[in-house]
Image (cartoon, rainbow, N blue to C red; front, side):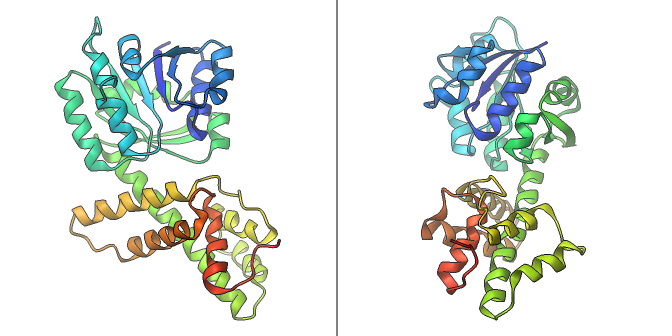
Length: 302
């Protein structure tokens, strides 16, 4: 059993991950960032609290980070009381930092270099599925790491993941996560737009749902969006502003490679528009509400 540190255990995904690490017998120490209520149950069953990320780095072999995005990851690693500040005070080497956030590959590359210079391994291991699977220990994890780091981490990752994919060397996990989320949000934004166009054209869009549900276009994301037609807005528990951030990271990736991202920019702007209309802190299915405002369509029963 490893000594594990965790930054972000109060988050929707982080809580389930931390819970399963504890349940499988690992010693867990976590930082508490504002919302103590979200981690009270973890502390009650044996998790310890550290005053800072630096304290985690001193005491733990592996530290997981599961936060919003690259700015928060950078602060956790490079801050005055960040992980690197504490790693130099360890009695032994071998600290591994595992970033489970959806982060920008360029930022992760810079952090990886800074960590390597300090004798610390930095591994990208972003997640897919939802907080429901996080609590159940059934997440998907996509890992970018050297083979020796992956071999060390895989048993620990399987405490909260049903599927652990070694995507390639360092950085590959974050790149594939951005590709995955771009495709996912393309489906969501296209579905919301199609619902609005169909309703304004005079058809019953529930008939569209019947058709797609019986054919090759069907998927879980489409069904989550379809639930909005019955008034259920939480079929996909993923904040719209987080989706917008992820697709922005994807378009930055494409731009850095000098590759046109026509679809990526369209999806990003659809999410940005929905956020500007006041839906950013809601879940992604509120794209349908944004389409109602834009088009005058009547889709969500009220």
